[in-house]
Image (cartoon, rainbow, N blue to C red; front, side):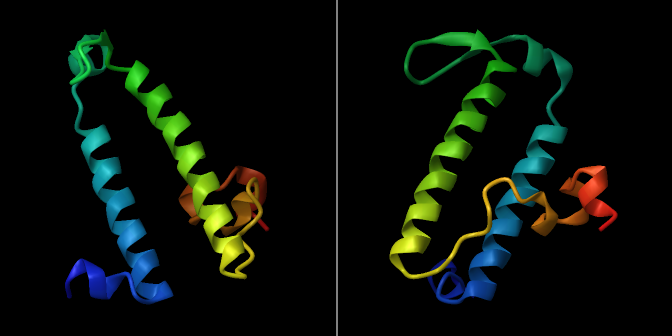
Length: 100
């Protein structure tokens, strides 16, 4: 199934999101420590330790999550509570939420 067709349904969209998350998780887990701790050049001519990228990704994640929430609301869909980890996959829930 092509990506455009996949993104036409809620189930397809969620599947695509999970596939992207799994691919990113696999890529991060495969990074050797020297890449994480060493200096990384960017296309913008800046260099910083690789681990700084994770801080930047976290910022982008929160920013785009907010965009998705605003978009869902304009479509009349109530997004999940921002800090409600109970809907997360069990592996990503805090211990207290995982046991409920």
